Amino acid sequence: METHTNNVTAASSAVRIAAGSPAGTAFATVRRCFALYGALAAAGLGTVVVLAGTGHPVNAFMWIRAVLLPLVAVVLHRQAVAASRGARRAYERVSQVSVILPVAIIGVDLIPGICPPWYAATQIVCMLPVTAVAVLARRSAVRAAFAQQR
Image 1 (cartoon, rainbow, N blue to C red):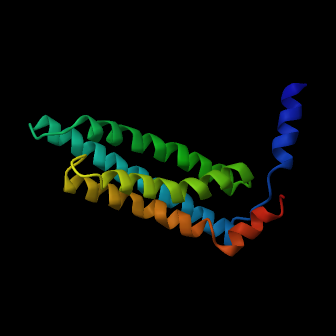
Image 2 (cartoon, rainbow, N blue to C red; image 1 turned 60 degrees about the vertical axis):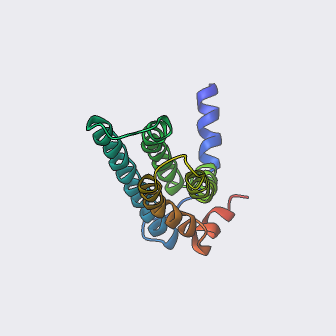
């Protein structure tokens, strides 16, 4: 009985976003942006692995960041999928994280001595699709689709 109640609550907190609508098109792009972010983050991890394997200096910060960011990409993509299906909470998470993540990643990379410039540059490139999500998630058609739920 409890499961049924939770499903009803979850269903009532979602809006219908048509695939061809402006909001649906925006979220299709959001999902692709997070997939691209995941691919770029995985390439960053691969670069760290190769450099470490060939004897180049790789610090703990680079290892931790390189492992965590592809995992974050998976979580964000799942949230984007949920949001594209009309889940307001997922939309709010995508909207907020897409602004906070690039600022946090780039801000930390700018701390002198924390990572080499080439690594900071790869992180900036990884954040470009996330920054695009920040813009897409704030489009008026997307906001309007989720404003109906309030």
